[in-house]
Structures are given as C-alpha cells and as structure tokens.
Length: 380
Ligand SMILES: NC(=O)C1=CN([C@@H]2O[C@H](COP(=O)(O)OP(=O)(O)OC[C@H]3O[C@@H](n4cnc5c(N)ncnc54)[C@H](O)[C@@H]3O)[C@@H](O)[C@H]2O)C=CC1
Ligand SMILES: O=C(O)C(=O)[C@H](O)COP(=O)(O)O
Figure 1 (cartoon, rainbow, N blue to C red):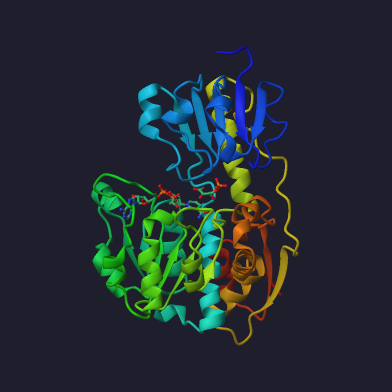
Figure 2: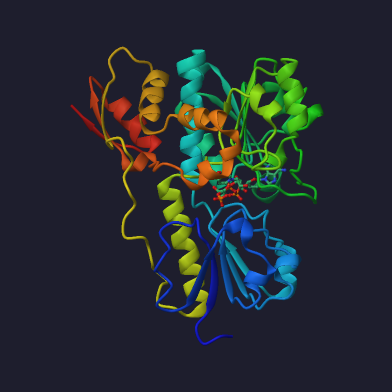
C-alpha cells in the first residue's frame, strides 16, 4: 500500500474535486478511458457505468477498492473482484428518487398528450427494489391498480406478487426496474423479448429505465412497427452510446440514460462513494457530504391552482413543472451522436423534495397527496 492512497476517479463524478486531495493522490480520467495502464499503480477506483471493471482492467493492478457512484453494478465483474479480494461497493438507492421522478414525468406526459386517465389503468412493475418500490407507491397514490413481479423478493419474503405472464397480459403500462444479470434463474438479459412482448396488450405502453439489455431492442422495434403494443419510452439502450436509430424512431420518448441524473441523486452517489472510501482507508471523511446542491434554472417555489383539476391533472402539472421529459427527448433526437455529451452536460434537475408548492383552491386531501408524492406544500 502507498503512504497516500493512489486513487483514479471518473472525471464526470460531480462534487468530488478537492475532497480527497488532502489525503490521497488523485487522478481524474474520463470513465471510458480508464484502462489497465492507468489503474496499474492505483489503490482505489471511483467509477461510473462507463468503466468496465473486469479481469482485463484489474489483473496487473494494485487496486484493492472500487466504489461505483451508481446503483447498477453490471459494469463490475463482482465475482472476479470477490475472488481476487478487491472490495467493491455501489451507491444503493442513491438516485432512486430521480428515476421515480422520471417515471412520474412519463405518466404526466401520458396524461397531457394521450389524455390517459391513470386511475383507470393498471401499472405493472417488474423489479420492486429501491426504484420499483417507489414506482409502485406512485401508482397506488394515483389510484392505479398496481401489479408487481419480483421472483427473488417473492421467494425471500412472500407477499403480493404476480407472475411475469399475468403482469404482461394485464398491464396498461409496464415499467422495468430490475438489474441487468446474465445468468442464474432470475437472469434479466432480454427478459422482455419477442415472446414476452407478444403477451402484452396492444394498447399497452412499455417503459425501460433499467438497463438496455433487459429488453431485446430488435424485438421491440418490430413490435412497435407492427403495432403489437401502443408505444415505448426508453432511457436505456443496448450498445450505448451507439444506439439503434431505427429503434429511436419507433419509440414515443427517448432519453440518453439520464433517468437517475438528478443533482440530488448525483450528490448522494458521490457522498456514498467518498464515505465508503474513507471507511476503507481510515480517512476522516466517513460523514462527508457536498456543501450544497445547486438549484435548477426554474424557481423551486411553484404556485399551482387546483381548481377544476382531477388528481391526475394536478399531478401532471406539478410534476411537469419540476421535470419535463420532452426536453431530454428533444435534445437526444436533435443530436443522437451526442448521447454521451448530453449525459456529461446534463442540466441541473432537482427532485420533488426540493420544491415547495403553493397550492391555490386546494384542500387537505390534495395537500396530503402532494406531500405523499414528496413535495413540500403550503395552502393559500
Ligand atoms: N436509468 C438510470 O439512470 C438508472 C437505472 N438504474 C437501473 O435500475 C436497476 C434497479 O435499481 P434498484 O431498484 O435500485 O435496484 P434494487 O437492487 O434495489 O432492486 C432490483 C429489484 O429487482 C429484482 N429482480 C432481480 N431479478 C429480477 C427478475 N428476473 N424479475 C423481476 N425482478 C427481479 C430484485 O429482487 C430487486 O428487488 C439498477 O440495477 C440499474 O440497472 C438505476 C438507477 C438509475
Ligand atoms: O445508477 C445507475 O445505475 C445508473 O444507471 C446511473 O444513473 C448511470 O449513471 P452513469 O454512471 O452512467 O453516469
């Protein structure tokens, strides 16, 4: 071990510059450029999804610690790390509130553009962990019937789950929230393939904000061309950042893997990574947090008039004021080759808890509803 830990950090991880320098030698490198030469003498890596941490990267290195500032871990060969004694950790739940906001924005778009009456629809949630459980609660708050499929959870705890077939056959909106896994009885690679797409209602919508490979993109493109389902919303893609333009042209909303990109989620991910590194190397940063999280361009004080609005309409108006998914969709469609650039220069997005709603013509039921969604609310 070096006297001062040698740390390689993905240069796109926000809030971290200057934090570790008093205690370590730090090298900031673009995630996809972090290679075996760069990590050869490193003790620790703090990465994102763009650094594949496998034998090829690690075998000739001194790396003992990897933190990924993400929820997903499919870019880390965890079996190899475990066998080699490389400690690895992810930022559990860090950006689940951000993905929840993303799904809320998709539902708002369905209300605004497709006149969806959410309370009459069935929402199917596949994978009910940190993100999926928030999406389940969202559906319930909106008065939707919610079906949940999560075989590992069901085996571990029992509960109110349905089979994948039942969920696909009965849901009007299906949302994917599983990790990407390529082996084992619960493997999710191409979980939604040609066969499973054919089980869905022809009026159904499919949302994928998990990992591109959980969905067979070619099969989805065909299903959309053949109107086997009504539409799809994709945040994640096979072969990112080189995504299929054919598929992009078929989906209703397309975004460049930014569902988890709230500033709140990024700050939490960085804090969790720094704290984990601090514990591992005995640094005095076990409780470190960023000093502040920047505010978005728009005001975080929203005045909303509730008169003559259904719960769905109020929901759509409030959510849209915090995050309009069409902005990300338009940016991607205008410059698909800039997929990675758009992720790197993502605007400041804040989650619901950063907003205070000044509700006019509301009542205590609506106040409770908005609070349950995560907003701060005043009634005037
Ligand atoms: N688009 C984005 O920006 C983001 C994407 N993600 C993705 O979302 C995934 C889920 O995130 P979390 O909810 O935090 O993970 P989590 O680990 O808390 O929950 C995943 C759930 O999926 C379940 N599951 C596993 N295999 C399954 C299968 N075959 N069928 C049904 N359920 C299955 C697990 O039992 C677990 O309950 C992450 O692994 C990541 O890949 C996460 C954050 C941001
Ligand atoms: O947390 C996850 O898992 C995600 O998918 C992240 O939001 C992806 O972020 P990057 O690591 O690709 O910046």
